[in-house]
Length: 283
Length: 301
Image (cartoon, rainbow over all chains, first blue to last red; front, side, top):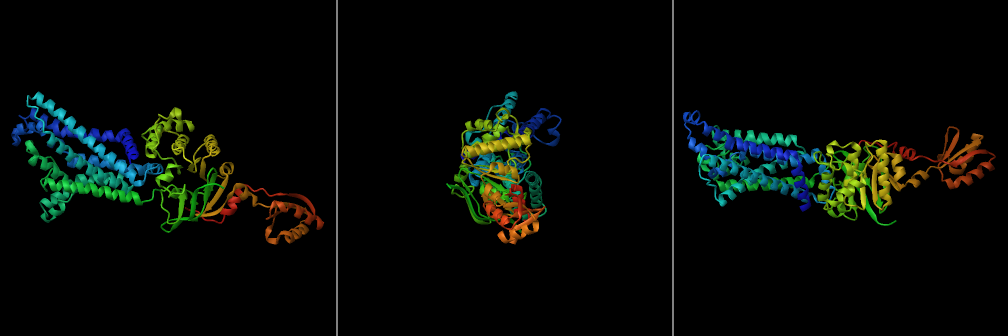
């Protein structure tokens, strides 16, 4: 499996789409986590006082102390969607280009090849989470310095928990993308379906369960996105110091239950993908 | 005859109601260049896919190097190029081979040697997407050679190449055969098979119709006889080899009998006071043999 892992890392590292997705993810995180809130703070006389929001709380969300909730705020929705696209591209392209055949006629067994791909995707999502945290920590430090605030970063344990949670969330969405890529043996349909699911279906089901049909709540609480949002909520209840939780960050289930659900999803997606790749002909 | 590298027994594959490969039993021996000959849709590619472990047989069995097709043990000693080469368009030719090398578990240093073998060393850094069809095909062969395999499975390797590219590819395959590689080559190009192969399997409609050396396949031709008067000649020849084995074509007689019967035919005609004006082995081309064998077979696989 080491050879397959190395091959996958080489492919992912040299693939422009990987860097485009990383760039978009970092840009969106910066935009919604730091640029817009900090701009609002700078112009708070015109903005927040009329809306009843505390400008100090908005600024606090951009400072080092809120690094974990601010970094993870976009993970349940847009970062999740981008991770899903990464997984779908990595798996589905092999069929679109016919390269699954090239890989399978070398040496590894199907499961070794699959394991190598999943391991490479896991390493990539971990790297993405790490880079996101590193960039956010730098930006938060700059803002704190400019605003003469303390460089009060979270403890190592909090950071580790945040990194682990982010990795689990992105890994889950990436795993779903890969599963869809293997299932549909292409890229377009998995990306389309996956993004619709992440951005629309989960929100609609949650909205219906919250208002029109509360009996749907047990079902809602099983959804992957809801559990991802609940895990982020558990790290910063109520949206943390900023007092406003980003879209998709919800108080639906406990952090422990959300973590367990996400682990089960990752395992289920991986097992279903293995079943598909092991059994099907490559034509 | 040596060691059997590929062996299939009643190998079959159906896709729904379509039988793509129907009880094919073939064998490829170490050191030979084996031509797998058949029209488009005959079942060649599906058979090769089964031998590479990409497609599971519906029935029958196959062994490659004595192992299950697609097993790491079999693949470690087999280079495969099935249909068009498939690589990552955003990578260079060299990086594509590095990817293949990592999958295959061979060191990166073999990549440049493989590129050199197919004369792509100077273009190895170019993106694969910009390669011509011939360059892509050569890169496919380079990938198949990376493992320095004992057995090469090449499916229509000259497809889409221009005449010069086809000549170069055939020279490469011939060279590989001479260097001791065993090659299983599928093609629908009869001249190609006749030029390159020691033995041939003819497949049509998913069924293996014949398996023999090219010479044996062509040697089943018979004798051509021209004699006067034709009526008496025909009577004599029919008495000699049987009416079913005599066909009159354009004023000549074609006898379905071995060339070693030429003396007997000559004497019989002389005894019957028939003037023999021409007697020679009937040399059919592989194309004639092939069309004769496959003419009544359906395709569509």
